[in-house]
Image (spheres, one colour):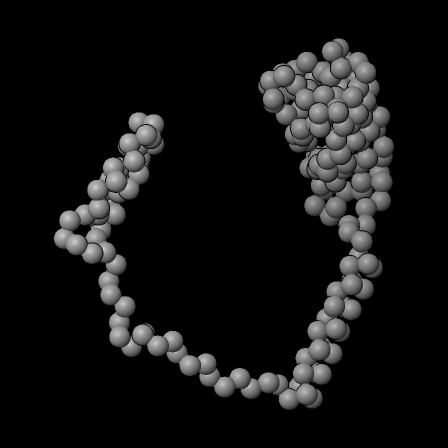
Length: 192
């Protein structure tokens, strides 16, 4: 390479939009300031020679294959036998639409509480399209018709459906109903 750096205009031309030209000019200046890369050391002129590869003896190879197959079999049996959490349904709660969401509905499957007192549940919603605000919906337990305990939030699909696992870490007998509202609002859209 000669002693003078390459001319920027010769490399990219003069027909670039000003923002793109400025961006490329900054990159060009940085590359020129960095200088050329160091020379390749002479010991790397020739690529290294590959070493000798020793294959596993046939007996060891069969043992490794057998162990791998056994591992896959144990995993498959465990997966099929486990099938996920083994929840029993404690209650099924129907919800109907209210106000601007009168055509919406939902079902909350409440499963048996775990040892810590958490009530796993799953809510299935239909007809509740995403709000224009983009905010999520919230599922609340109510007491005397007032929002009392938040169980979780969810977003609805554009077609108004969703299935969401949730959790209620409360004593359910302390509440008298369930509602769905838009986040930040107390306007009930679904109720029991």
